[in-house]
Structure formats: C-alpha cells, structure tokens
Length: 384
Image (cartoon, rainbow, N blue to C red; front, side):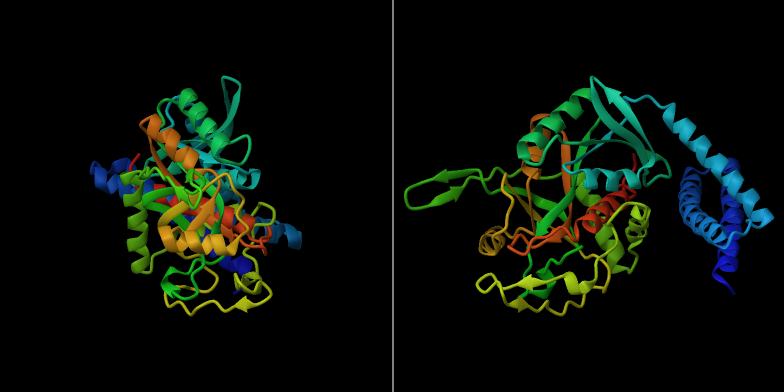
C-alpha cells in the first residue's frame, strides 16, 4: 500500500467518524455524551487536517489529481472549518478568559500556530491575536495573545497590565517562551535537557536580581507569588497521563511545522560542558523516564531576572539553593502584575540552552513550539 493510498483510507475513516459523532451530538440529550462527541470531533478534525495537508502535497508533487471522493471530503471539510471560523469571529472580543504573553517573535508565532482560528484584533492602539483552544468539556477557551515590546521583566509586567486593561474578562495569564535549563548530571531524574519543557510549580518564580547588597554578602529577597492552583491542577493531570503512557500534547508540536527553524535538532547538538573546565564535555546521565527524541516535562520553580545568564557556576548555585529548573527574563514581572490585578498566572518554558558560555540559538525554534504545544494540551484539561 502506497503512502497516498494509506492517506486516502485515513481520510475516509476520519470523515465517517466525524459524521457519526456529529449525528450523536445532534440527537443526544446527555451533556456528558455530547461533550465526548465534541472531543472526538475535535480529535478527528485534527487528524483530518494533517492527512489532507500531506495528501494534497503528494498529489501536487506527483502532478496528479485528488481522488474524486477525497476531493469532495476535502471541500466539505474546508467549508466546515470556515463556518467554525465565522462563528468564532462573531463572538464578542470581550470574552477572552486566557491571556498569553510572549517576549520574542518566534515565541509568538509558535503560540499562534497552536490557536484555532487566529485573527488580528486591535484595542486602544494595541495589536493582539484572538483565537480559541479546546477545553475539557468539548467547548473552547477564548484566548488573547500579545507580545511584550522587549525582553525583560519590566516590559513583560507592562504588557500584562495593558492586556488586562483592554481585556478585563481575562482571568489567567500564561507566559510562554524559551529559557535556559538547569542541568543536573549527578541526578538523572532532575536533569533538564535541551528541548524539555519546564512549568512553574507551587513555588512559582525566584527573582534572583531582587537583592539586598551588604558589604560581605548579597541576599536574594525573593517574593513568592504562587501560580494558579487551577492551572497547576491541569499540569498535574498531564503528569498523570504521562504515567499512563498517554502524552497527547506531543502531537501538537506538528502544528508548528510550517514555521522556520522549528525541527528538533540532532541529539549530537545537545552538549553540556563542565562549569570549571568549559573545554570538557559532560555526559548526560541515563534517565529511565526519558524517551529519545521527545521532551520531558518538569514542574519546578523558575528563576527570573533582567539578566541574560551565561554563567554555569551561577546557574548551578541557584539550582542548588532554590531548586530552580529554568532561567528566564520575564516571569517575575508577570507574577507581580497578576498578583496586583488579582489574576492567576503560569509560566511554561521550552529549554533552548544551558545558560553557559556555549549558548547558541539552535534549539530556540523547537523549544518555543514545544512550550506552546504543551500549553494547548494543558488547557484541554480545563473547562472554559
């Protein structure tokens, strides 16, 4: 069976299943059954979208027409998706309950690739992207996406305040992007690697440049701001799924395939150097929880400062003292501003370097997409 024939079979199967679930959704009076049908339709539409894209590509490459019934299915599917977009666009712009903040263009486009029906929206001179993400009940979260004007805790704090001014309905802010990881080669279960995802846990954010400077010592005066209990509960549910061998969110990494420089780099580029002898490479420990070619997810405190960290000794000292898993430059500002506005927050970071002198950009695209994909999976665990 050729790949093209195989895809035709998958497309027909998904089309039949969507029709069956749509009939069930229309006829059933059981809310739980309706919710299951909506989730099943979303899953089959996701599969259909990928299969049709590849099938069209193969037909184009071979200069062959699509099979007649497949062409009819594709036309019907495209009309259904367009109708969903039309309905989504008719929703009131004041409805978003989830705000997403990024700092870099590559982070923003990674998140936008995860949104259903992303479209531009302007409020008080500010540009946003509105869209939806699936929720746990078969409905959708209404999301507003924004990018800070620059890197750093101060711009991130300001951007959160502006977003909450323009969208007072937003209840939770999620900071998504890339970060340096905290490797721990002596402890395999704690060893963060490139491409992994780090999510802020109950300990929140450690702002390591908020200090008291004395003659003999510098003390970090961290203000703990716990993340959202509701969002953390969703993160724990993903953790439960992983223990069952069900890592559904990984499939969403494919949604970023159309972006530049987002393929997972070769494992040979994941190099860790000795903090005391940078010319010497350290071996990564054998980790029974790690599946080659896939990100591991860590929940832990995240270090934040207006500092671009390229100091392995400093990295390890903060890791050992506070148990931090990642280092970045915006989360402290997000945590403070959401606390002032009485809103929830969470930080999701894809790991792109080790915060040392070997820092390069090779893993940034993949890390940004991994963090965004995880967030789509996270919100699927929450009702809107």
